[in-house]
Length: 125
Image 1: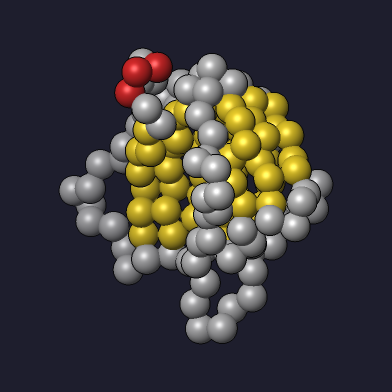
Image 2 (image 1 turned 90 degrees about the vertical axis):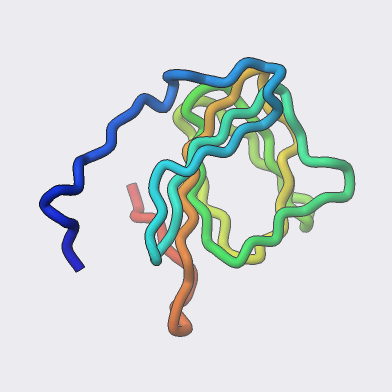
């Protein structure tokens, strides 16, 4: 299916118009299609509530654009991320946000699995 000729491209800045620290953690969908979703997440020193685990149906590719964060997985693995770092999180890999810096900007891509497809794979550098 092709886009309508009248459809205009959208533009924006990942670091523009950041919500202030009193706004809580903010999730903004930048693009959504049948295959997945791209979102900007802005965290201000946030962490997942104690005992809470994300258990998502989608594979996720996430990058820290600004700031830093630490993720924890239910098997005990921890991963620290700084600006420019990214990782893939397979669907149903339980994880939580342990900590974020005062202002952390994330770019997250959620890829839906379909028709028995396996996990999405990142290209090797």
